Image 1 (cartoon, rainbow, N blue to C red):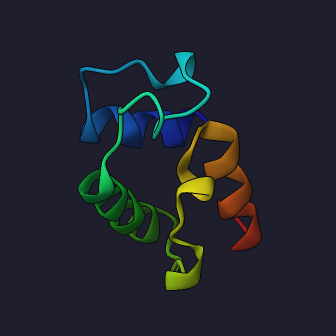
Image 2: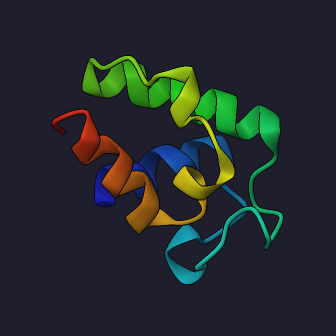
Image 3: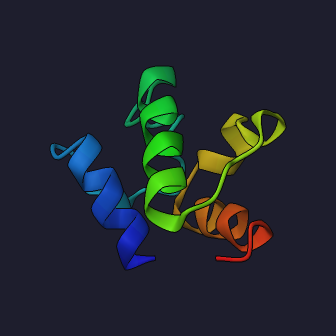
Length: 74
């Protein structure tokens, strides 16, 4: 989770992601940020997130992103 929070902080340093349960609803991430996040997760974890998995539900909070990474064995 710390790795994910650090990546998010690099993308949007003005927000404290550990304090939100829904990054999308709280307007902390927009669609461009999600694309940037996917690219960075792919690079850092040497995975390739499938386009079908790039949906708001998988990027709402740290737990959802962690669950997505688990799907890819990380």
